[in-house]
Length: 387
Image (cartoon, rainbow, N blue to C red; front, side, top):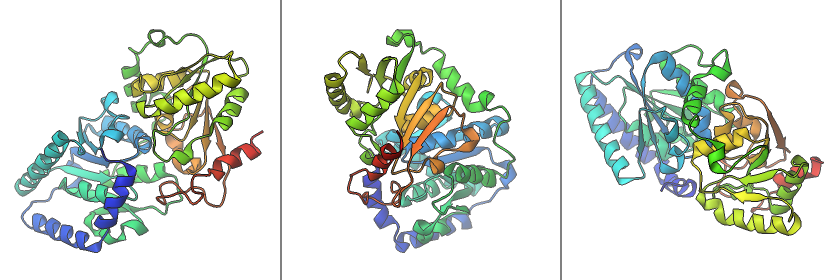
C-alpha cells in the first residue's frame, strides 16, 4: 500500500530532471503521431490523488458539481488508503487503485488504450493531478496520456513542470480548495462550480443516498451522544491530542455526561483501547465505546454528523463530515493550518475551530519530520489559550 513516507522516498528520485527529460521526450514522441482535439469536446476526466483522503474530500464536491453540469465520465486514479473516502459515494465512474495488481494492470491498459485513441483522434479526455508535492502523482497523471494534462506547480515541481499542458501555481499559503477549484475551472473552461444552495448541492445528494439505509439504532446508538475521532491512523501522529488534553476537551464539551463513541480505522483500535482504559480510571461513571475499524466511512460520517458534538483533530473523517451539514463540530488543529485546509465554498458552518498559530505551524505536508520532534508544541499552544 502506498503511504506518505514511502512516497516521499520515491519522490526524491523522480524529482531529478533526468526523469522529466525522459518523459517529455516520450510525450513529444506520442504527440507526433496523434491527433489533438478541442477542449469543448472533452467527455472524460482522470483525477489523480494518491495520498490524503481528507484533501480528496475537498475536491469531491467540485467534481460532483462538474459531473452534474457537464455529464462527463470521471475516473479516479488513486491508492487504497485514499479511495476509502470515495468508493462508498459511488460518484466516480471508475476507481483505479494503482497499489494493487489489478489496479496497476488496469492502469497500464488504460494508458495503452488512450495512446491508440489519440492516434485515431478519438481521445477526448483531461487528466488533472491534484497532488502538490508528489513527483509520483505527476508522472502517474501524465501516463494516462489524456489529450490535456493539468497540474500544480511550485518550487518542488520545477524540475518536471513541463510535463503539464496547463498549470496552476500554488505558493503553499493560500486555501487549497481555491487551488483545486481553479484547476478544474481552468482545465474545463467552465463557469461557477459553487451551488447557490449548498444544502442541495450535488455532493449532498450522493451522501444522502448512501446514508439513507444506515440506521443509528442498528449500530446501538440512541438519543444524544458525543462522537470523537482523536487519532490519525498512524499518519502524522503529531496531529493527535494526548490523553490529558483529550480528557479536558471531553470534560468541557460533555457537561451532561453523554455516551461517547470513538471513531477511527482498525489501525486506531489499540490507541482507542488504551485511551478507554485511562479514561475509565478517572471517569468511571461514563460510558465510552470504541467503534474503530467496525464502521464504514459512510456509517462513521453519519455517526459524527448526528452527534450532539463531534470532537476531532485534522482527520480525513473530519473533511468527509464537513462536506454536508453536521450538528456541531469542534476541531483541533496544530501542525496543519485550518484556514488553508477549510474550503469556504463547501464549508457548512457549525464548526468551532481551535488553533494557535506559532512560528513552525504548519509543518505537515511541508517537511518529512516535525521540527519539534513530536513534542506537539502547536497543540500545547491551544490549551495554553483555550480555557
